[in-house]
Image (cartoon, rainbow, N blue to C red; front, side):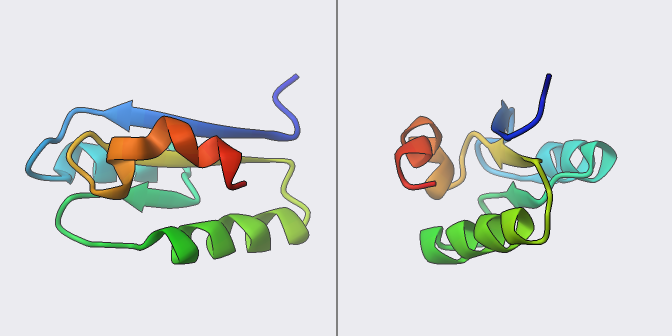
Length: 80
């Protein structure tokens, strides 16, 4: 079962986020982290909290490998 899960999917994109954008849109991701835009950890966490409060049982975050937050993507699980 994929319920009550948070998926971080890291894709290629050290300097540009077009692959992450295409993957995120295609997968219906809640957030897409790309190097061209600094989303900020607080905004990401708030978005994931709102998604959970609205009744979603799982979330997908697509991360381009070059994103500032994405560099620590596997540590984010401790904050959620």
